[in-house]
Length: 406
Image 1: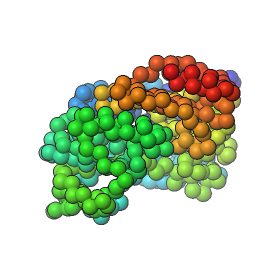
Image 2 (image 1 turned 180 degrees about the vertical axis):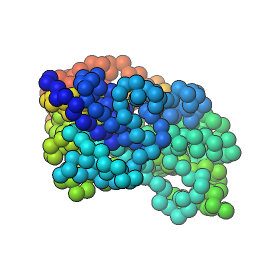
Image 3 (image 1 turned 135 degrees about the vertical axis):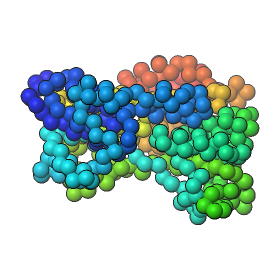
Image 4 (image 1 turned 30 degrees about the vertical axis):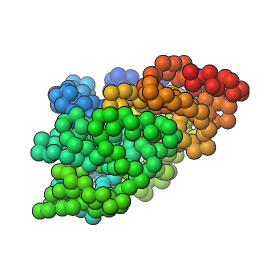
């Protein structure tokens, strides 16, 4: 790959995608100039570790992956607590809220998404909190210390992580889910019932088909939640996992196409030359399915950062991978592979569920091609499934498909 002496690269967002991109750029072209901008006060930290920090399983010191000094040693200009006000395509500059203009030859936007707040009346109480950033983890942990009971709101992975952490920290927990089950677009009725049984075995009360009608607030502090089903839930803490809104506002007036996130091709390039997107915000063209979709996982962000860097340097590296997400699920595990009906609604599925063994396998097909899977309990055969998804494996017969469930 040919390098151009002194090329200027600007990266907005220092999560896994942005930080990996910055590091890769410097490794591939030591002569380049890299500026890494974040509105947070911190260098890179591991968001995958935040649930363990909230459960008091790891100290805060183990969450941070980089230091300010590391950036200086790596030759990366690091600008924390810096908000970008505007991107100029004509001038090839980034304008900060403080008035600084930073020129770029190629730009990466890796701004991710912000958590949706609880919109119910009283949802702005001091102890109604989200869980996305390091500061959120600190605030939640401090509030747990002064609480006896908590409500976790939402049908997302974040809501589950809140429910589990509250339980582990000794609180009486109610998990409030608007839909008929957790991960309602991925799991079917059997899978949802299995998750409910696992939660109940840990003393977590699950309420489905209800939302927060209003939060009972006294002197600015939540003291309870009233559901749309009329349940009054006493609590001293409300934690919400209600999805993300992608931070696409910087694309205004740039001509960059957006959907839920920033639309890119399989090289993570936008329709505007020189501008790339990576990580949670990249609504990228998936070579495996031919669809555009978002994938908010740590591994995906790391891989995006590397591919974006190579292409910002002039390469034509496609992003080709099987997105994966794995998490604890109280005393078991859940693994999601490839594409699910969240991003491919027309996918058909096959399921096997063994409640007694706490085992669940669900496979997703696009016509006769395996495109995704979800496993609860045993993850035996996970690598084989990933290889088949990656290889565009076709399974024309029902017998072949059923064999993968075993």
